Image (cartoon, rainbow, N blue to C red; front, side):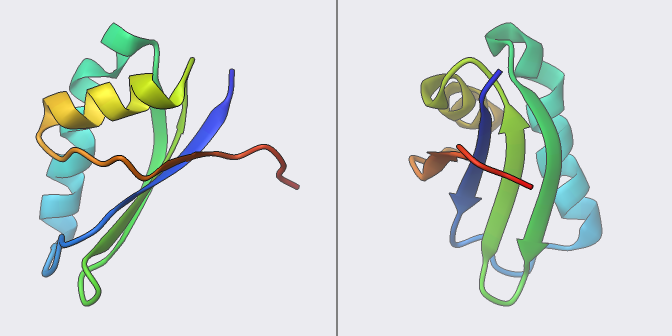
Length: 82
């Protein structure tokens, strides 16, 4: 299954609790698209949030995020990792 990294912008001021809720929203519906969100990171100062996931396609990842209320079109397939 392909691995993806996506970026959300303009999420300034996120707290640990808010980041947990964003992640839980994805986890609650991820199986509908056969996606699994493995990890999420955020920088509250810049407003950037990064998600690492596995799924069948970039579009599947985008659909989960959109349904969870934090859409992004910035989803990249990670072809190589060590």
